Length: 336
Image (cartoon, rainbow, N blue to C red):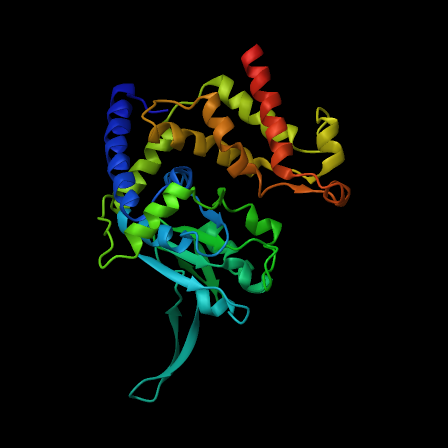
């Protein structure tokens, strides 16, 4: 918590003005999808990485490109394909010969050396290439030929993923999924929204978004998020929710024991703590509430849990399991 509450309040207000302007600029190019935009901004404010999941043509790539512009970040895009190799992302050492005939290795940086990396259709690549992002996402550095290379700051990965049922996709390993702060599901737009999209994107000119943030301003906003106070009731709600989703937990419900194969680890609680603060900041509040935990439970937990084979055979849905846990925890908090 900040030593000076008045100073923190002023920082929150200034950041709120920037965020409001950022959302207005994003809305010039992204029509509708307010929840998706909010969750993506929450990911950046929390200093994390986001996984955008949806069918092709729903604007995932457009959203990431717009965010890079509005947030003032240097961005690169990598189109993941089955033949993509780890060196194509991280970089490699090449042998060069000088004019004097001396030979030496020089490191050529890959596209991961940027502030916002768009990993497009990440589940099209092989597991080996997917795993090449692990160290970069967690440690903000890569190791090539025994040498460590720091990535720029801030560093964020926004990956897009097609539904796993589609042909030619590979499920991401659990270790990599856990490193995404939020899984942001993108659905089809409503009819009126789709009509507006048609009219605004098929004309002679398209709207252009302006830069609002700078890398320094984004890092300052991330620092504000981490200074925001969190009430004891919110902390307990986060702990109750995450721990209740683990089938081996003594207090787990029969539904979780029967349906869930593996549950969320401590990183889920950390993600929920940061994300609730960021959501409160975006909504002009000085501290998160139980409502923030409820709103972000699905994006934080759905990629950190898996149903067992028996539950899948019965046609059970992971989202329904999480909803039941949220109802149980939020009901307990209201009763208290």
